Amino acid sequence: MAIIKCPECGHEVSDHAETCPSCGIAIAGHIARCPQCGYYYFNNLTACPHCHAPRPDDAATASQQNSVLKENSDSADNVNNNSAYVAHTGVQDGAGGGANGNNGASTESNPNKNRNIIIAVAVAVIVVIVVAFNMCGNDDPDAKGDDKEQTAYEYAMQSDDPAVLQSYLDTYTDADEAHRDSIMAHLQRLQSIDADWNNALVSGTKSALEEYLEKHPDSPHKQEIWDKIDSIDWSIAKSKNTPEAYQTYISDHSDGKYADQAEDAIKKIKTKDVQPEEKQMVSGLFRRFFQSINTRNDGALTGTCEDVLTSFLGKPQATKNDVVTFMNKIYKADVSNMNWFINNDYDIKKREVGDEEYEYQVTFSAQQVVDKTTGEQKKTKFKIKAKVSPEGKISEMNMSKIIE
Image (cartoon, rainbow, N blue to C red; front, top):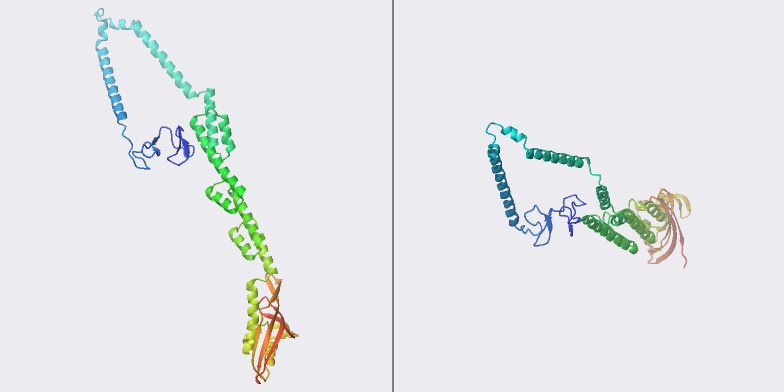
């Protein structure tokens, strides 16, 4: 007896098993072992499918079969000859006293013939009884026990519970050796899978869980593994607490347990913290504002402002014309050139004024450098407080000189 791989499906099975418990193909008496490479294959093939070595010629078997056929032929000839002889001489046995035509009466009174008839009838009755017994079924308790064992064997082979297989081995200690070997091989596979699962649990790392799932893709623990990986990735996102980290979690677990919480966390961060792209938007807006003043570009200047500003240099409800008036006012007759330089000291806060719409409160400093026609250069520093609307335009702006 040996444990082999089924040539049909590759499932481990005893070479004494009647059929493979996995695919149902016949095993016992139908498998050959290649003398060259040791590979097991169906014995109806003429060569090994693994190394292509031809099957050894079974000349002895062929010779024996020819001998049996000849013996059967000779026996048939003897039977025919004997029958012919009996047919030719049977009547002659009574010829000595049957010349007057009493041969038939002598045959009917022959006691040997009557005895043979009785024996033939008895044999026929026995045959009928045996056939009827087989057709009606066998009520032998041992037969019923075999049926019960077969049912338990088939159930255990389909089970993924090691306890079920061990129960079979403990209950059917006298079961067919092929059945017990198949159950033990199946149990060892399950125990190996359980060992891998326990190791993955002890490790508790994402890589160990993913490695187990790759090795056992049809594991009954599949959903449990996904849930554990989901929790691990969520913990990583929370520890980083950035929109990028939460977005990565959502991308990897679109249907994850914490997907809604990740969305809320992103929204909360965007509501509270100024993002890099928002700071870039604000700084770019004021850079364009002062560059427009440096170049005295009316259109570019008013393009950075709302139509009505809540306050501009102390004037409430100021218009774009008020902004242009300011620019023209600072360009006095003795000014030959003017440049504004923004210090990169932005302090930006934001608040939500609508559904994902934000207003920005901005504080920063700037320096005005004025070249006069007299050759004199004057430098003045200002502290600027402003507001930027959700549309990305200046909605309020006031400046105060910084005295050094």
